[in-house]
Image (cartoon, rainbow, N blue to C red; front, side, top):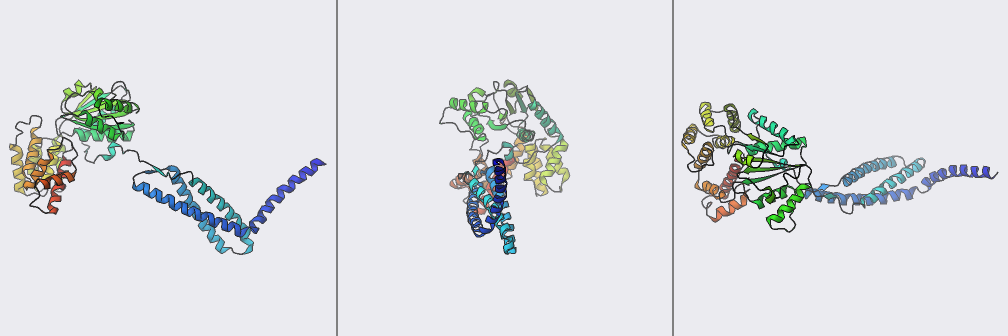
Length: 444
């Protein structure tokens, strides 16, 4: 008998509870609607606050946390649901529908409450610093996929993918386009995800260990902990680089053999570290232990002519003369770029003068510079139309090699030396912009 009573009690409970709940929706209609309104007010205020924090973080270049993005998306979806619910309420005001509306209001209130609780877990932390941009993302377009270049690009990539290869060298005369080619190699390696990190440092003719250390550390967003000596910095850099499974270190414009230990490069002991050198001298690459050396040739006559015409950007008025000028550039991209940009929209006598000067110009005592590169630079300098522009260019020579000269420095020093005393502000700005383009044109 007790068993029967227990079973009957359970059945009654299972029937009465849902019925009571349904009557509760009807009885507490006004309360449930007010609760929803209050909760929504809090949610809208929280959403506005989070959105303001998100906007501020984006302005500072930070990356929004994924849970915050998901929360905002979910809140927006919930707001749409509330909007549809409000339309339903306005259409169904009769008592017959109050229970159903009250039940929906209760469910929405519960959803709103969950979102309010979730927001409190952010602790005002909606974003995190953006990772440092990959080096290849800062490169400007400029590589031409000529056949004479792509063969070397593809070969270098395949060699770098070889686990047994630790160091390769890319050699060629100044102005042949080694740096431009290396940047293309880096971009393609990034697409293939061969390395976790790629860093690049310019070595130059008079290498500075501290400068190389700083360039590599900057690209890794790595800070030396209060250490000022080169040896101490080398130890810290070595430890940081060892933490990276696969890294490619590009050392551009190497003139003499480098001491990797003094810099802090873990070449050798760390199998995940590979080095790519560029140098004008293949003996330097050999001395440093390069397992593969690629010697980059000049452009073919056909490629030189194609590049020249592309830079000019329009049909040539003097094609035969233009071809002779192009030939004087000897297949060197830097010379072609310099001369072609300078001859845009020029008259025939200026083309004749350019050809004559390119043929007669000689490098003199500058033994490290190719004759054609020298002649194109000298001709470009000689044809500057004002002494102020020439003075500004010479002012650039006071800065270290490969130094990224801030334009405001040139303006300040130029004014100080009186270079701009006879020209107005507009002309001064044009002069500085020309120098900027001129400098960028030689980053080959």
